[in-house]
Image: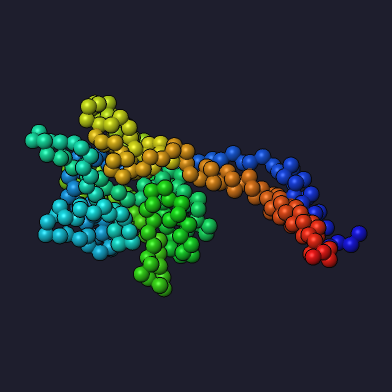
Length: 305
């Protein structure tokens, strides 16, 4: 039998359908979170918006000094996000709370890379430039990065920033969790060392989680009864407790399922033993065969007017 393009695609169509039926079961997804990582608790009821954490972060990471306007309050007039020149920022929110004189009470919230237990950015990185370290830090290797920026798309907190102003050697930039200070020197993140109100507590994640729940239990009228980051997207290294709902301080409502659990399960299902490309070609083959058949039956192809 002569193998024409049409018969080839018909054959691929049958093969694809057959291969689909023979696809192996998807591999069970396993968390890649380290067994005993570090964590940091942020108590929003203690934060006074001094922005000392911003200063310490810029010093440790050799970043430009944070803006210090003559009136500190003006910096809070716009909501800021971490970028390539500031790995952490503090924002101010008015959520309806009033003081004893009926004046609006602000809530200040620090934001940075959350260093997820199962990071979506790590899963999305196609060259392994991002990895989850045993300390809990999501570590970035600039020597592996190809600038695809998939990590920026994948992050549920929209944290990774890109050095668009550097056309030669741009990098993806974000909070490092002071990786070097923790791992090599046994030290603390810069922001933790300088906080004057002890709004930041650093330690092993399970230890700071226990502390968070202790504060919630002992002060039920003071705190929302939830530790943000305990379960969101599988858990994060940065944990928050607050007197106001978390979505009111720009901490997004997220599912408990880690983002990579869905994406990696789909990848394994689709590409196990290369059956997915065969199925894809099969579907395309069937489509083209039907398309060519319709074209052949058209009057113009039969010599009709």
